[in-house]
Each structure stands twice: as structure tokens, then as C-alpha cells.
Image (cartoon, rainbow, N blue to C red):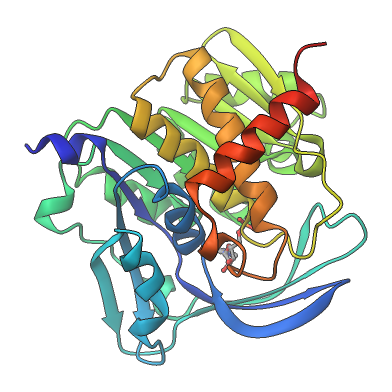
Length: 306
Ligand code: AMP
């Protein structure tokens, strides 16, 4: 088992063409997907191995920017048919996407198969996707240090038994406030976080959009505001790049303690604050580690030291 493999993150999730409307404009068929946003963010801090599927309509050159960041695309497969498509709209404060249309296409029948060289990955991120597919990935990795999953209302509402089975097998879950309330069946977010922990994951991160996030880590609880900004153009990918920023930091430092997660959540918050500044991947794709370090300093000055 190579030393680099233990620091590497394997991510499995969607690769998409997104059509997005926000109060600031609209764009059709732009590159997106949970695995793409995650990889773009996490690869700034740690080696990333991407597993996903696209259709014959997908020009592989669209992922060249990820390869330039060192993302290993050896787990990308092309299948007969069309690439996953998602259409969403954000209104008002843009805290939540309204899904207007979703076509799973080749992603709907995708059976992930990890290349042999990916199986020693120390970190596993199960980006938003069917819990059945997410569980299949877990059977293909050898003793990872940390497994974190993302989920969404679609799976909570319609695939709950599979999701509950997945939760028994992961170390952590990231989800937004509405999803936490729905999964736990309670309105109080702290109670909801605790209930989700009882379902399996010892770490639960509840994202509250512009209001920051809550961290449940064993018996400890932490709260972090979001980065105060007016520049919100398109929130698509905020959640996935938040997870990428967090997981990249965890993989780089190897510190999985409460303090380690708190620091990782600063990286997560700052990364997501850049993502929302442009449509789709436009801002995230040209983000650097220096940008993150600079804004992490601004963030600490804005929210710390009271
Ligand atoms: P977020 O980071 O939560 O804003 O996620 C945005 C990405 O999630 C978009 O690029 C979509 O392509 C992708 N997405 C939307 N619905 C699904 C779904 N049901 N399964 C997997 N990915 C999805």
C-alpha cells in the first residue's frame, strides 16, 4: 500500500450538465455534478481520485482542468447514452435550489467499479447519489481512515431504508438543515444532529447556507458562521465544494479530532464562499491555495476573537 494512497481521497458522485437560473442570470448545459465540484475543491489540498460516469455526449476535454490539478481520472467511464442532467433555480436569498428537472441518464444505472489502484485510498467521499450506489463503493475500499457521505432530500424521502443502511457504515455525514430536519423528524437542529449521529455516523455536519454550519463530533458540538459576503451569484456546488474543502484539509493534516474538524470547516466555508461568486465552476476552477489562505485569515478576523 503506497503512502500517497493513504493520503488520497476517492470520490464517487455525479458528473453533470447543469442548467441554472439565479436572480443574476441563467446558463444552460454547463459542467457540474457533485463529484466535479468536490474534486475541484479537494484537489487544492490533497490527491483526489474520481470515479464517475458520463455519456457519449460528454467531451472528456471538459475535465482537463481537473487533470491539471492532479485529479486521477482513471475511474471515469463512458457509457452508451446521455450524461446526467440537472436543471435548477435559486430565488431570493438563494439558500436552496429548486430542482426543475433531473434526468439521471447513464448515472441512473451506474455501477461504480474502483480501479485497483484506487482501493487503498485513506479517505472516501460518497458525493450525492443513490445510497445503493454509495454502499457499493464501500465494498471496494480497503480499511479507509475516514468515510464521509453526502445526501439530499430525494434519497431521504424515497430511498430511506437504503440510506439508513448506508448510515450504519459511514464515519460522517454532511447534509443541509432542511435535510437534517427531514431525516431526523425534528425541527430543532441540535436535536436533529444528535439523532442522525444515533443512526450511525459519529461526525455530522449540518450546513445552514448563509448561516454557517453545525458540527457534531462524538459528544462535542461546534458552530461556525459562514463567510460574510454580498457576492453570491450562483450557489450551485456550494455544498460539494464545502465538502471538498473539508475533506482536502482532513486528508492533508490527518487530524480527525474535534479541533481538526473545526479547522477543516474553516477551509470548507472559505472554499464554498468562492464557489458562489461565479456561475457554475467559473470561480472554483481558477481558485488557488493562496486565495483560500488569504480569505481564511479574513474569516478568522471577521468571526473570531470576541
Ligand atoms: P450542491 O453542491 O449541493 O449545490 O450540488 C450541486 C450539484 O449537484 C449540481 O452540479 C448537480 O449536477 C448535482 N446534483 C443535483 N441533483 C443530483 C442528484 N440527484 N444526484 C447527484 N447529483 C445531483
